[in-house]
Image (cartoon, rainbow, N blue to C red; front, side):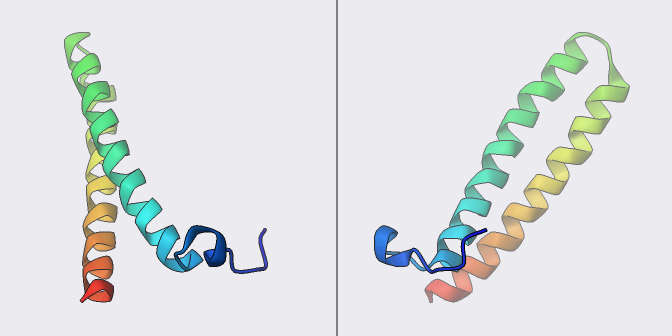
Length: 75
């Protein structure tokens, strides 16, 4: 676990970089889960599709929370 700020390397404080990374990861995950949902539905596996839908919903919630927090910090 890093104990020193690396913002001097990236130009962005670690905590802000982490927030942007989290937002991007949630959005990517949501998109990927959409493909997984389609695959499960195409194969007739509604149980699996429902699992992926719940996970996608959680990813969307995480993205929304991160967007709200980021928005407040950018203004």
